[in-house]
Image (cartoon, rainbow, N blue to C red; front, side, top):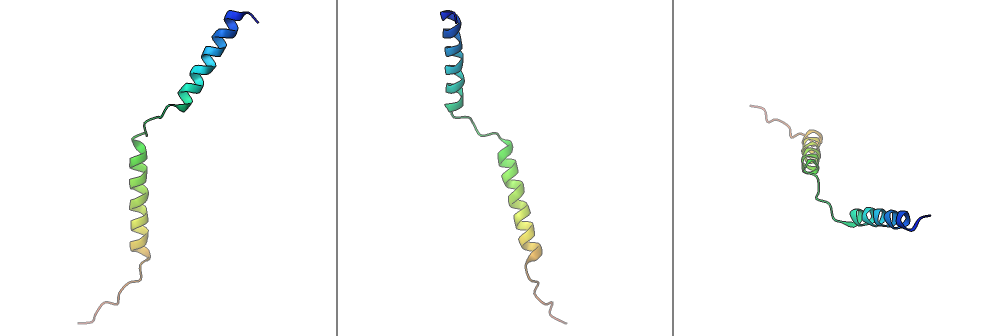
Length: 57
């Protein structure tokens, strides 16, 4: 393999490895997803909670 090609491949692979290790900002939709699941969990707790008997008038 030609030394210049080998060096270019080495630089490209090194850049890929650096990109994998850099911290990435958390996508904004994750907050929306967590909020949605939290609302579902609260709704299920409300729906499955034993009901109190209604006092008769």
